[in-house]
Figure 1 (cartoon, helix red, strand yellow):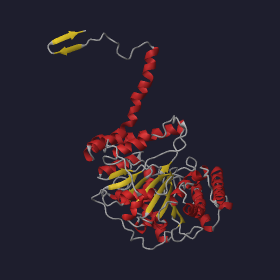
Figure 2 (tube, one colour):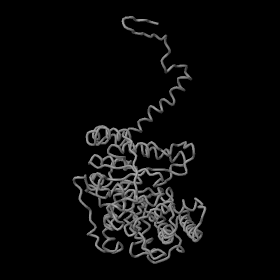
Figure 3 (cartoon, helix red, strand yellow):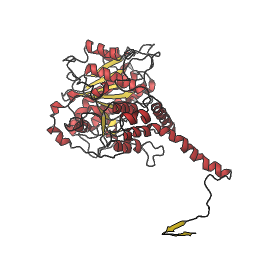
Figure 4 (tube, helix red, strand yellow):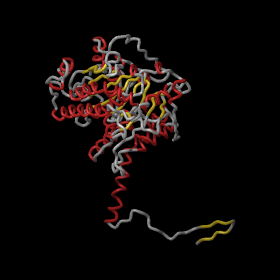
Length: 487
């Protein structure tokens, strides 16, 4: 391990590229269940990144709803309307906390004149969304247009979370939709990939690959940010920090992604469930940064799109020429997007094996970054003083156990696959990096000796059995020149 600390100076970014030359950015936000991951929480995450200090015409947000719930779509229809007020409010007043929920809960000492009005609008939106989720029905009173009514008509009687066609809805389009100040809005697209009970869906990795393809047909940005549904942006300059590495001409051309740490809010002082996991999300990545780079943590990673299509020597520059000036709402673009989001699209293809996020493990984040490093890519860990993202950790023992079980199964899948870090990784990457990935992969096995050590001393004590060696008379031999003294 070679701990590395990095620091960027955003003001120097203008020496490398003008704002008009910044690469386009596609943001992927994943959610799966409106009851386990409340839509209002996902909405807050989306609004926080839509308000980035980044050229609006270069920003697109894609929301993957893997549960195919009309409740999530309704929540984002409401969010699209609220965003036309929230985004100009943040930029006009230079708000740093751009997640609405976090901003209003912080009780800022000095409110701006329109703050009360914005807060009232947010509360009304939140009540409508939570009411819909609680009842499970979208009231007709909440539907404002024929287009919205048509969008909900896709949820027929045979539509289930595990068996349904692809649903793609463009909620905001850059260049067409404007905020209340007359400025263009970023793209906001709802995506629910097609699913079939007869085909495996590959969980989050499958959802991310569907977003890769859908976004390629619409905006095809060269830089991608992936976020979990509850991991909101805490710093509007985060994309600029990532660009300081991605656009640096002196940086290694094999740089695949910039990883920001996972930091959590709302954890109690004692953190009795170990939810913060600082060793996994902050300490180990800093150590691996001195080698080939940290693992992908599943959220907060800025990727070059091209890394998902081959190694450094195989990739080509992805161009947006095929998009032309077509609207992302055009029939041709939407038809293409629905085609690549269909559940049969990946059949007999290399998606998940040679392209995109990798299949084969429940910890698709760690496995994908491991395979990328095996292909020759590198990564960087960026840990600024102000957390770039803040998220939720398991708040009860049941959720903690479920999360730990899923991680453990996924890590053991990596251990026993043909690309095991202990055999394949140490030869393909290098010895130290391979051992780092092996350490992650073998972590679940630590539960065996820990469990034994937790119970064995108590059982031995109850049965009057000694499990430690007895103290014996101590013999010391001192050798001094030719003399040997024995005590």
